[in-house]
Image (cartoon, rainbow, N blue to C red; front, side):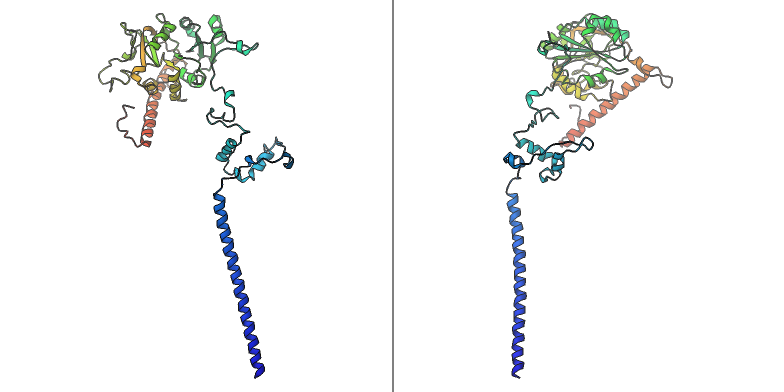
Length: 415
């Protein structure tokens, strides 16, 4: 009996010890879990409280850094630096983070105000604009230009109109750079004229002047010129002088203009008809119902596309309205007003320097006969189709813009 009691006591002590051991282990586990959780949370808040470490700000002695050679594998196109960047967590957001690193690194250049694509260049080396000035292949570049023309005139030409163009060029002084766009591929024949040697010749077969203008008269290319003349080849200029025309344009504050048209030939719109009793006019009366507003085309703020003249600033806007696929420019004349304000004051016709539209369908004959139609008929159909397309694009673009602003688009005549 005594032994049995002793055995029972031993068992009770062992059970108490076992339970104590289990409880101790449980408490330690809980303490470890709680400690780990608290550490993670604390570490998270510490991490977000400090800005991202920028490696570009670390300055270590060069003796402590290994030499890294940027050896490019010509076959793979990869470099050691690019390979290392893949594993750099700071480069995960490659767009903004890379730009931010460049901005924070005073040893690198990043100028957001530079032209797009030139942000890595120092501003004083950037030349965003150009010109058509001819330069020598020898000597000091600073001595190349004995004069710098202030104006630009372009004609889109075929060789059959050489005599007419020769007469026109003589109306433009040495203060004009001359550019000929050749739609018939014939350029060397023009060397019979002395002025042709200082002209710029661009030749692409069967293209219109607006196709050429979009591709070769970018505003940054012609930025050196105060005014840009973009003219057809079939214009009579007996009563026209370019220098006098420029004086009148400046005097009357015209940003977009054209010479008046001789009334009895090639006249489509009353607005462009020459008035014999004034220097300039900016508005007219048209047929009943043609003008919804006396300050809108074709009663005002309107010139035709045969002989337009643009100021530098106006052309920078107009160029962006020319669509690559709409090569004839029909409809553009009604939209020119979008580029100046107030348009009915800054668009006008110069009456005292006037021209004659000879209506020679030379470019029209560059078309293709199809379904029994003459070449010019296919060209004319394309012109009308482009007019409708351009009007639709402009209307849709304006509607989308004003809808995005939450504005009422029911009355678009004022836009």
